[in-house]
Image (tube, rainbow, N blue to C red):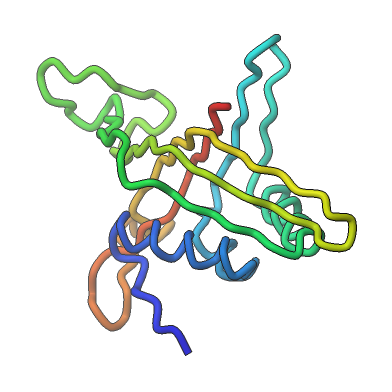
Length: 168
């Protein structure tokens, strides 16, 4: 059995996401998503963007896992990383990325290229997809106390994906 690291850093989260996608593990995939999660896919040709919440993304991803016999997912290491500051969270002088969407917390943002290969062997139908994914992550907090939720073994804060945007 594979021992996966705890969700105590963005790097660990990416490692577990890679594992969940390549092993078509929908329960593990769902565990990576924040309860306030949203997926976005802005249209490149008109104003009809796609967006859905955690429940819908888990449903759609689960259907893809069931339909395709082979799923190969590779999140490339190169890309960009920055902090999106909450507007009430004392952003540093000159900060460029300030958000009113999450005024009291900062989110870590990663934009990376991804390649995916999806194959249905029974119909010999497949897709090869190359896109950029932007992941916004945050530390999980107890809704009652506002304190970080910590991994019971490491005592480090738990991270989850709160926004996922696909740029085709």
